[in-house]
Amino acid sequence: MDMRISSVYNAYSVQTGRETAQAARTEKKRANADEVSLSAQAGDYQAARNAVANAPDIRENLVSSIQEMLNSGTYRVSAQDVAASIFKGL
Image 1 (cartoon, helix red, strand yellow):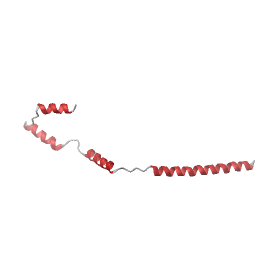
Image 2: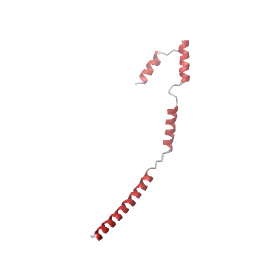
Image 3: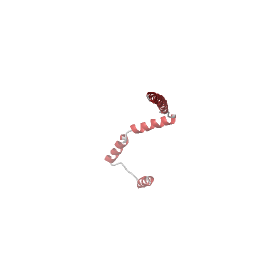
Image 4: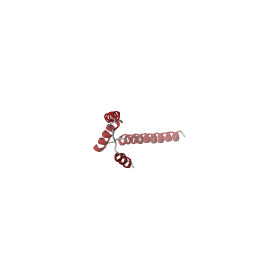
């Protein structure tokens, strides 16, 4: 009976060793599979996206010039321009 136990233990050890080696190979494949490379176009897109994200939401120079025109009473908008802007948004 002692011989049977040692045979089972040896078989278990061999199986455990195989599983460990297989796990190591799988881990190595995962490490290699986690690579990403982007095209030049994707890099350009990312740069443009960052530039837009960092741009101010309000163009202060235009706002200040319109405020000056409003304060001086020289700001005029034609009805046609307003109508065109409304229909442009549809």
